[in-house]
Image 1: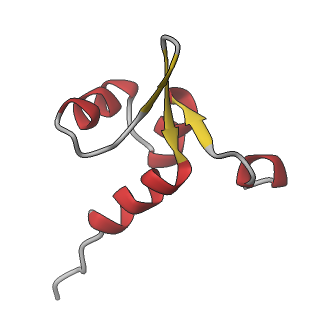
Image 2: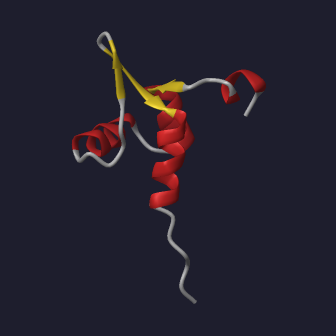
Length: 65
């Protein structure tokens, strides 16, 4: 992550999908289900970086051996 990206508070759908390595349609389902909070700026949808990190933490599972 470069310095510019690390200082951003909001990511657009493209950035969020890339960082989670999912399709934009997956983001839509996560929004619809209330699992990934989002912000609307006019008609644009943005994701708070902190919310994306929280989402990752909530969905991290330990592997079973």
